[in-house]
Image (tube, rainbow, N blue to C red; front, side, top):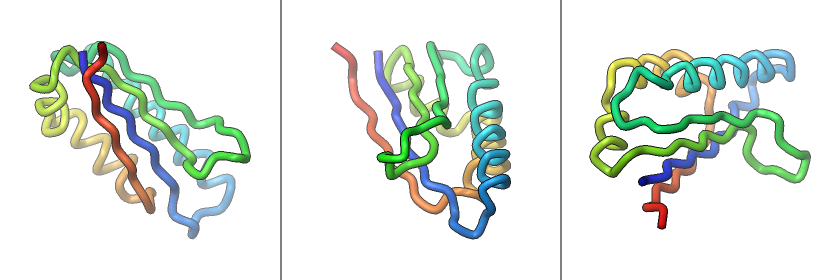
Length: 101
């Protein structure tokens, strides 16, 4: 199994209300991919973080193997969500992929 974890910060130009709606859209879009992409075992998006956080959105996903993660990256359903709900609104992205023991 492979974990794929991403942390995003949103662009500062958005109001708090806009950020709330953007985060909801990211969560709904990415979690909606469950069952659509082969090898995607689990997907969860966290948008309610503590004030001590320096990221505003976290994606925590699990794949059967590295090949499934690579296929997810280019899958049309994932690309559509990323292009419409994530990339236009995020300022920074950090990613960590690792094999689970």
